[in-house]
Length: 320
Image 1 (cartoon, rainbow, N blue to C red):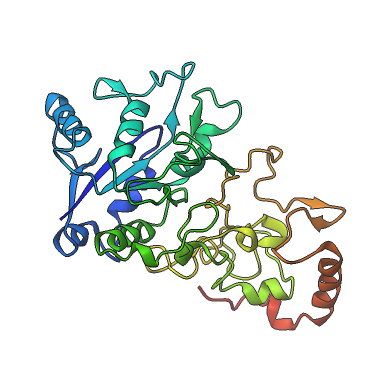
Image 2: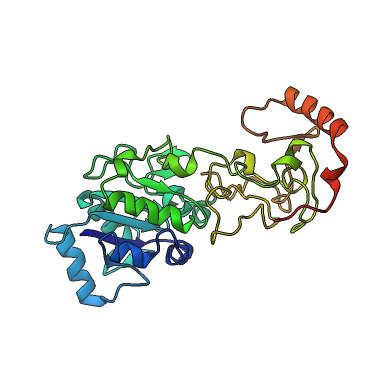
């Protein structure tokens, strides 16, 4: 039996909604097939008031073991570092989180807010929000860069806004079946099995990207979304086009540019108003080029691609 405790800080519950829609495996599979016992969850737990507080204190005192502590949402430190803006079970949530993290075997951050602060941590950040072990790309966060759970691992980050449901459940299964040792974390503590490739990997519009055949309309079935609509697929680490959402689609397959929501900089609030869905350019060259491409090579690629573009690249035959 693997005990799981799920807590929520400053969040919209989007990752909970995603988690409850998981299919490979489902939440029911976690319980019936993999022996995960959900001690408490904001949307699933039945304990309230004194009963909930008693259970939490029993966890802290070692009477109930916490194998997996999952946290969704930001750690709210306002006002003035007290955390009083986010109280839970008669204490600031950050106090519960700090204490429970010390007794948990594994700590898992689910969603951008828990990983690196997300939208609540945007400047000027009045809630003094931060992620568990990162604030944006800066290591440290709430628990500090040297934090290690009882397993010896740092916080396992599963980013996204929201995180893909199967990313969440598959990591939980890896822990429950003692296979988490096979999972390699990158420098941002993300499992490489999901985040070692770019969102562009598996994108059905890659051939259009190669020929610089662009689209300027959302939902259009033809053309690449990078050149005019600011798709961040070539610069974003995720498996959204390898592990499809609802087993069916992804943003780019539906004609929507990738927003880069698994990266610490999301939601890219440094962009000017009205330019979110627009490629940021400097003298006609995208400000953010695909990884491994320099400006000189890009300019040459653009020239060659346009000259060699086949007629079919602009035909509206593209299927999703």
